Length: 185
Image 1 (tube, rainbow, N blue to C red):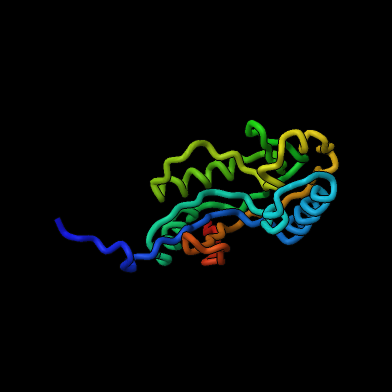
Image 2: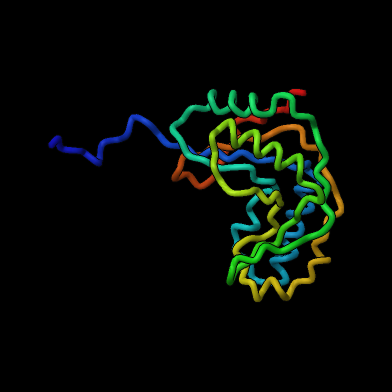
């Protein structure tokens, strides 16, 4: 049996790709202010203060192949029309002892349709998507129950007209923008 040298560097580097929808700067600022306000009210994990508002579509890891991934996303959004994402309040996802404070779109059919197209393009098999913008995640459930949700209502919207592709080395701390892929009607 051949001997394997595990210390040898791999010829292929794995990267994590993250596909998401980016709201406009107004909503990004509002969500950042909500995060700061929540941190003055209750104890939340600090990483919540550093994350930028977005709606997640999918994450996956593979060897570096930026151009193929950009082409696949462009193919998936071809024929997709711009749509408005409307928010009308805050909600909570309960996960046992922890919970997530989030903004959930009023009508998420277009986001779900987009997610379905992208998922089939990438042969991505994951459960149903519940579109939302996270204000804070992994918060102790008892702490979050002290919060009045109406203090975090957001009655605003943004025009969704592109998918943002982020990329990072698997062990890197932060993502970088690889490409913003506009919808091509």
